[in-house]
Image 1 (cartoon, one colour):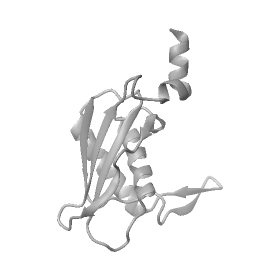
Image 2 (spheres, one colour; image 1 turned 90 degrees about the vertical axis):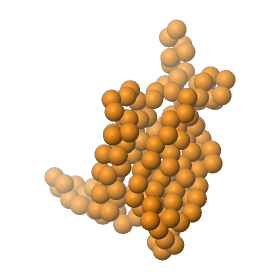
Image 3 (cartoon, rainbow, N blue to C red; image 1 turned 180 degrees about the vertical axis):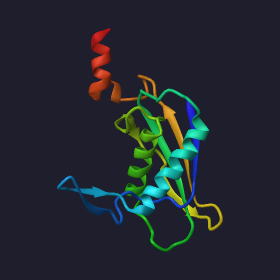
Image 4 (cartoon, rainbow, N blue to C red; image 1 turned 30 degrees about the vertical axis):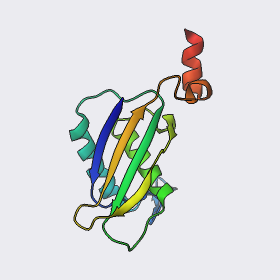
Amino acid sequence: MKKRYLITGRPITKKNSSRYVRVRGRSRLLPSPQFTAYENTALWQLKIQTGAMEPIATPVSLKVEYYMPNGSSWPDLMGLVQATADILQDAGILANDGYIEDFNGTRIAGIDKLHPRAEIIVTTLDKEESTLYGLHPDFREKRKRK
């Protein structure tokens, strides 16, 4: 099963410009205000697209095409992927971003000055398509209990 999602706005990585703050006497690393704003917008957009669906709790293949608004402040692809995976989990689309088996075809696809975005395709994988059923502890446990 394939599900498509769209996050509009400039894709932002979680790592860049993070900041340390003191909370109850301890230092914590927090994402930048720009990422926090992007994440909040993305979560709102995804909630509208998904409604009240149950999180996907099986192995998945993730494909994301990122369109940047310009060539300045070029992000690294792995940072974008990590941020997107975390957002998909926080939005309740994925039960666990550790269930992503591959990022097949994920890339920075181009520049779109008017409509920067992340186009996401989540494909659920069955037992014949995924090695995670035999490798990931969550799925090995399920098979043993039956």
